[in-house]
Length: 291
Image 1 (cartoon, helix red, strand yellow):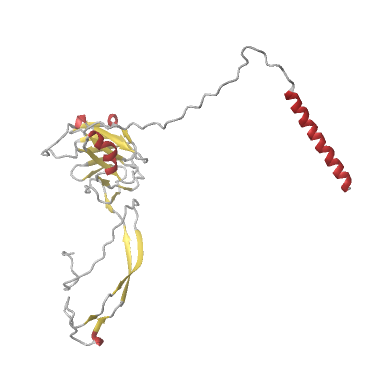
Image 2: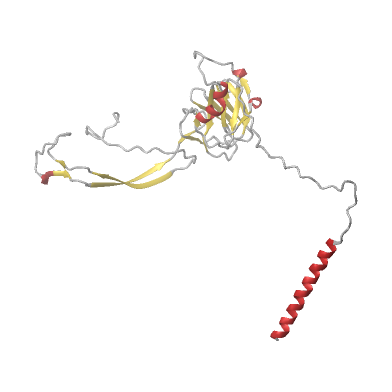
């Protein structure tokens, strides 16, 4: 870390904590201990990188396996954003809307925008937008048709605390001076569900250059999801599982002849009754013997 130094020290060690997405809007406390262990002894008079013993062992700064332990307390929270703020794409932020007012949030350089009327009990919500490529979606849907895909993943799929549906606008993801710029009115929009399947939601979006906060495709919604803009129509049909037909079973026929009644069914019933009577009689005999 070149831009940070501790006092006048030339060399400074830092620990960097990298956290996964925490969609909460409150602070979390983390406590723990960190232990450093010396691999080799260090003498007080040695220059950095020198192996020359210029002083006695009694002057050693530390010895082999010498340990130093630090206790730490950390308060972890996402960055707060409010009405009319402009977080960068990928920032781990939450929005604290103005109650009973119109709220607007724009991510990055017009990559996405949200506008809604907040109620008198508008709650904070996680508002991170990720535009990272999803390689599995490219492999499954984009590559087979050589499509260009752009991703809008509102992490955690938060619900917007609006009095009615909010307006979400997916901004134009390419620059005008790019080598390739598709016609935005001929693009397709898909929504990714929890099982990894895509649904064509193009008809739910309306493209406009100046009707909303930013140029792009807009939808009225209460929940922010994961959307993919494609310059080519994707095959999102789900194959139905194959079902095996039941095997044909031949039904015996009488070839037009009457099947005679042999009375076998009646004989079976008689035999069952006889068996029951026999068992009852045997039980009665056993009961008399015991008594």
